[in-house]
Length: 104
Image (cartoon, rainbow, N blue to C red):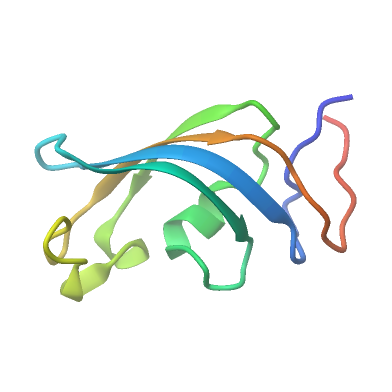
C-alpha cells in the first residue's frame, strides 16, 4: 500500500527533507528537514498547497511564487523581497491526523 497525503487534510504531521533556492539565480538559501502540520500556518502557503497528493518517498520540485512564500517582506538576509523560490522536497512519512492515509 502506498501512503499519500489526501486532498483534504486535517492536522497531518509531515516530516520532509528539503533544499530551497532562489528561482532568479539558483542560490541555495536553506537545506534540512522539518516536521509540520498541514494547514496550520507553520510553513509558507506554497508548501501547504504543494504537499497534497504527495506519496511517502516522493520527491517533488516546487516552484513557489513570492506571494505564496515570503512576499514583499522577504526573509532577510537570505531571501530578498518578492522572491520566487524553488524547493526540492521529499516526503519522509505521514504521522497522525484526523484523516487516514489512502491508497493510490
